[in-house]
Amino acid sequence: MAKKQFKTESKKLLDMMVNSIYTNKEIFLRELISNASDAIDKSYFASLTDGTSNKSRNDYEIRLTPDKETRTLKITDNGCGMTKDELDNNLGVIAKSGSFDFKNNPENKDKEEIDIIGQFGVGFYSAFMVSDKITVESRAHGADEAYVWESEGADGYTISPCEKAEEGTVITLYIKADTEDEKYSEFLEEYKLRMLIKKYSDYIRYPIRMLTENEQLKEGSKDEYEKVTEDETLNSMIPLWKKPDSEVTEEEYANFYKEKYYDYEAPLKTIRQKAEGGVSFEAMLFIPSHAPFDYYSKNFEKGLQLYSSGVMIMEKCKDLLPDYFSFVHGLVDSSDLSLNISREMLQQDRQLKAIAKSVEKKIAAELKKMLDSDREGYEKFYTAFGTQLKWGLYSDYGMHKSVLQDLLMFKSSKEKKLVTLHEYVSNMTEEQKKIYFATGDSIEKISLLPQVESVISRGYEVLYLTEDVDEFALQILHTYEDKEFLNVCKENLDISTDEEKEALKKENEASKEMLDFIKESIGESLHSVRFSSTLGNHPATLSSEGEISVTMEKTLNRMPGAEENQIKAELVLELNLNHPISEKLKSLYSEDKDKLAKYSKIIYSNARLISGLSLNDPSELASLVCELMVE
Image: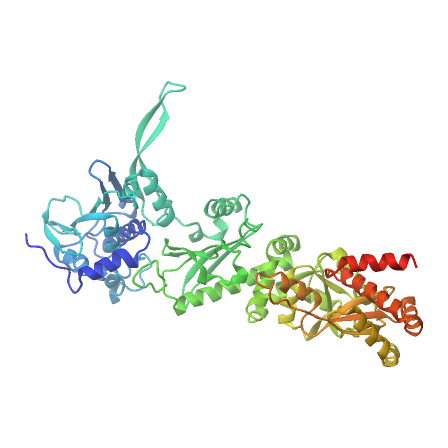
């Protein structure tokens, strides 16, 4: 029989499909299973419309038959089958999809019973990645004859009559020989086929069956086992997310989550979402109760599983989640997605973007609901993933602050527990104009800062920021409910009375020469030295001017590559005008400038230590202290 050539296509195109479009060889089984499911759907549709078939939905099945001796794998379905012309048209023309034509036939529109998966007509050819030869035996519904399509690749194909009693299709793959790089034999192993069905086709609506060998205890024996062959259904068929929420127990959700996402704990929260309209989809999302071990490493991959009509088409679709919600596990299932030439390379089209936007809003709304109704649960979540929310706010320059700002929490000086920004603002006094915060390595260290003690003593609440990202995030946020954020360790802390401000201004002007002398004596890159009236009982402290705070300096200089280009905050040494040390310094300026210079260095070093900064020359401080002790 003369071999036919593939219409409109060439060996180069088929090679491209096999070697470029599909990068994962195991995809072939998913594609053939999906095609078989489509064929059954068409047969079932025919039984509903023309009455020529007496099959019920329960009569349909897909069957796998691996044979190691002949190195063949058969995929059999009892669906609609194909005529000779359909074999020629559908398999003889690459990128010709009978399913696509069927779905877009006006007569078949809006049929809820039918859910065609195949869309583009190239999935079948992925089987050539693992096969030297493929035969397709098929008998169409109502036909008297059966035909076999046979091909060894791009050289062409033949179609000839064959014997087949039942309607449906049998695809036989002649599996390639193993090479050093590829072990094609694994596609004949029960465990591999079982794994691929579970991974990609678990929710195909028809049973996928295979004869499997299992060991069981021999009847009448206590320790003797025998091998038995069982006809096993490999797929679960009904997706959990297709069941009404009221029919699914918390235990079922937890078991699904732990099995699919390899967690030992149940999720903190399960989110169900169903959307219809411009784009229809269902989502089942999980908020983990803890961060995975690699969450904050470069090895972590975000993304939701993406399904089309129950068939997994992408293990991790990263475009469905923004980075700040990357901790979310789960899946999205939609039959409306536009697929390009391969299900592995999903188009970034408007439908996918619409789904992502809807999912983002749903996650944010559910987290806010948890914050309002389950404070303990939310605080557990925030302890695990709050850092990610703050990085999300900072990393995109506040573009999504409307989504994130009401989800943020910080420890508070008033209650020593986590509070939201809204709660902080609600507790502000009428005269308080700004949201005060302070930064440091720990709450204990922050609470000892002179400025913090001073602000608290005047009845104001202070937010304690202990993570590197905190201050950067608030700087991007800038305001909340029209209230500006203010680092209490910045030079523009304004909590003094008008009388205090006036007295301080006069004192700084009168002592300008002495303050300049102290600055020069310290000999480091101090921006300025001045008196302050907001330090309580503390003799001195460091503050900063400009955008870079003391904490930001430490954080930026710890980053990789910062060794050669160290960031410097514009440091200000503040001396407590109401502390005895100020009178001592004034006295020394008149009587002993050398000793004043030594005192200045000691005071500056102490201020650096209180602020969490290192000393450039610790031995100098030790020598100065010892020298003054023996005078």
